[in-house]
Length: 442
Image (tube, rainbow, N blue to C red; front, side, top):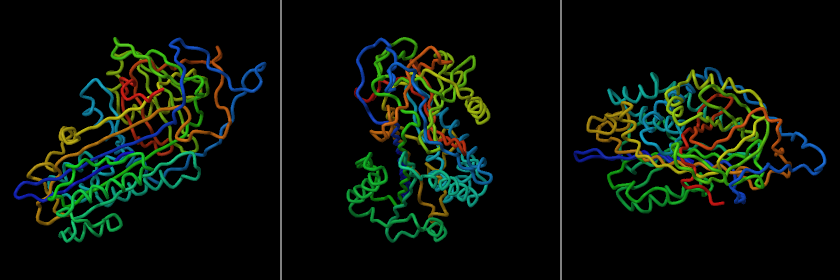
């Protein structure tokens, strides 16, 4: 789940405001693990030990056809993803964020901006027409959410605007977002407003995130607060058997080795490899969403792959995936990252929105509002079955045999993407350098 909190504040004479972003993803639910550090054969769940495991059957899912010209907005979001990743990649640790939600949220201050402030936002969003951008984002949101016809997954994106009661926001802005605006009194009980917003966050994330908004996030000078949440839970199309989960070594930065709970199975997955990395895609059940894992062959190739991040290269990697029998070893972990996003966006060229030159005249004709900061918190979980503890009792695990064409052993730093297979939108992306940080117990 991700929360975007945009806080426009009045200044006397200094502008103040804040943006907070939060992301939460649940991949699979937790199961007990074994403690041995030596790999053992993955147990077959077939009921007839004397015969070879039968290939399991899975519910078929027909990918929906994207809306006309969907590639225009998708390419903007994916380019933004790679551009921002290069700024976040200024340390050796884990990286995890939602480019889709960040992009959608930044479109609102873009709509409210004028002059060079708007020009800077337009450049990073690759936008030339605010109406066209808004319409394309609405189409994409509906395309992603309206396909939910089963209980196997949830994908929810919601927004709310909390405006100062009695403040003279421009009529154009109010007409643009009438369904989102709720009036509050930031000059009154700030603690009560914070409680209300946190309750909204909890409600939108099925109580996975509680009391997120920090006490200092809302100030008496706040005039507008935007909260934007994206929440995803999904069952694997081909779950992992909890009896096969085992502690195995994971090498961090080419030197340190940690013992990590590792999910294991042998099955048919989209797979490809080149001289620098291996690529594996794990689909979520009846959703059209999938987890793409990129495993560089070495730490040196980690940087090489990062330098190649682009729309054309990424699309080429994905289009090269072919169904193969693969022995999969994937760390079971829980990751949480927190970013003060202002400095990263400033590196991308968004500077005026945060300083005295800020021009949000389409929000407030007095031009006294600016953005004071962005907080982005992201969580991500990988487990055996999915967000549901049970999966109907149908086995989806085959025994490890010598018939697998490839071995995909994630025992070193790797990249992860959650993407929509139909539109090709990157919803979440990151790098996991150390899965032992915040790893789920067991």
